[in-house]
Length: 176
Image (cartoon, helix red, strand yellow):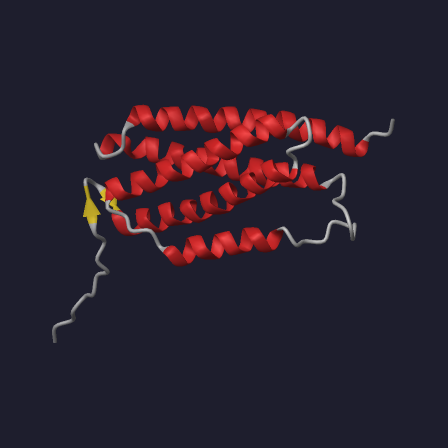
């Protein structure tokens, strides 16, 4: 009696498991979609505050980073899974409706929470770039210099977001 063993196929290109890399990159694209939407919303919502300049710059950079990810996915031949980006964009917009303890105006904590959310997203993005950087030696479609620049930009964005977060927290939670 002969037994047949069924192996799940794992398409590999240049040493990379493209099936899993596709899932990974699409998950990051979904996060980038939500992050870009939230950053644009925050920049508009706080345009009359001292945070307006840094938030506007961050929104532009985060949108550029999303475009960089899409370009990298195209270079790797990874198709965009639109259902993930649509779901992430919808979830981000629905998140704007959350209760903030106030009915008619935003809570002083709104900016703090939004900055924390965005900072977590930027840190996740940085980790994604670092993962790709660690794979660059296995696949010449991954440009080490470009990934190093994206990692550095994410690091700078994290510092900016932390500075804004601390200021917002102090303004919201300290009296006087």
